[in-house]
Length: 198
Image (tube, rainbow, N blue to C red):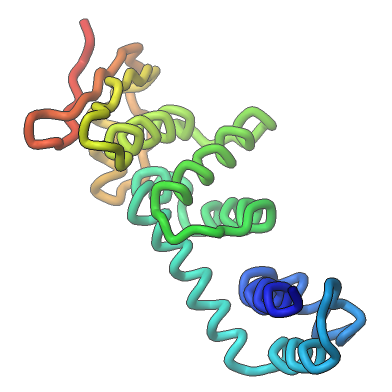
């Protein structure tokens, strides 16, 4: 039992900066669970090791790259400062226990949707987020016999202008209003295709 507790706390030192700081400040008193005296001593030493900060940086970089890879338009729309703030809030609430990109992306979508409901104001974010979530839903790995359901995304602004500007790395400004609906599905080659619904 102590080995499992030791491994869990060692991983937590990598992913949880507040816990790491607490162990550095309070030593063994910050460690809970069934641990031997030697395990407590080793965890305290690990918390102060130089390599732990490098490992933590690699972990955060890997997590951030998952978001850039799966939600590029959302990341571009948020910009570096706001993305950094939202990622910190998200990571503080949800430690990743998976290497899968889709799980991280859907979790971040959930976080941003909750933030929008709570008053976060970023022009076009609700539309871009809905579009990228729907695209991910179409691409989500499934059993070969389970075809993804078609996706529908409503826009209040011209999606061609909005999405093209973001894909070119431009901040979208004064995108013309256009109430429309996009219909997405996989084609025969399993590539996502989007079309305007009349």
